[in-house]
Image 1 (spheres, helix red, strand yellow):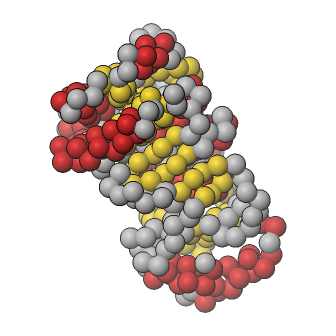
Image 2: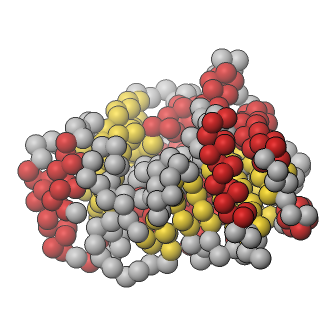
Length: 383
């Protein structure tokens, strides 16, 4: 009997109506003779609302208590889904991350999974139960609740699939796969049948909200194929798997959530960079000019950065800008593609700050937020 891992995102479990749709999807897998493990996110905007309410009490909430608070969202989703499945006549049980044997390191809100003891999961599966597990969370060596960071439920699902040695891991959301661009912004964007781990990692890292980038890294490590598909239809999704050795452009990502940070007249910039990195803030391009430190971060990391630099008596500025990234395996080895991209950006009458070319990606950073029409123009000429 095959074991399958199905993960459902926040929009999929957002209300009771959608929970019924999820349950139907789960039952389809169960009726095919599979042992079924489900991983769920918190419902809708639950996590955002919990963070907001905590910050009404403290501008910098204690990280351990935040993990205890945020873990509640996934527990609600898991228990409600289990209640529904039992009502429909299918034995089901909800397990928290710690009940499911998910052990992490001790870094609150940014924890990493170090081990999964599958004993409890196996026990429940042998009793023919559908096992519904809370994503995004685990327990550390001191029995503290920990969370994996935003989007961490994807990572939970892949980690469980690897631990259970399943053939693949399904990630269900409100989109039916990976596209050549955001279909909400580019109406002619095309869905990809398959994409490599490396390409998907770049796409996620550049701001596309299809998969958590850490989950892709984990899937590649264990050679675990991921199927991304929609909860709300039966369309064939996109398969993320080993490199396919092609060189076509796979996707173009426009990310408006980039901040250019400038800290003026700072001498001990290496100490500051070390603090930023140790707090798991992902640094983009950075440079040092006359003791001025300039770098980019994701907008979501702004609060964390402000906490680090609040005692620095320096002039600090942050500007929100756009980065467009063109992703495709081996793109740096194909000068015709690079030239075509550069020629297109010559035609765009916007100021470019930086062009970065790596193995699978060409990224262009602008000095402000630019119009979506440029994304459509790039897609038309490159794909």
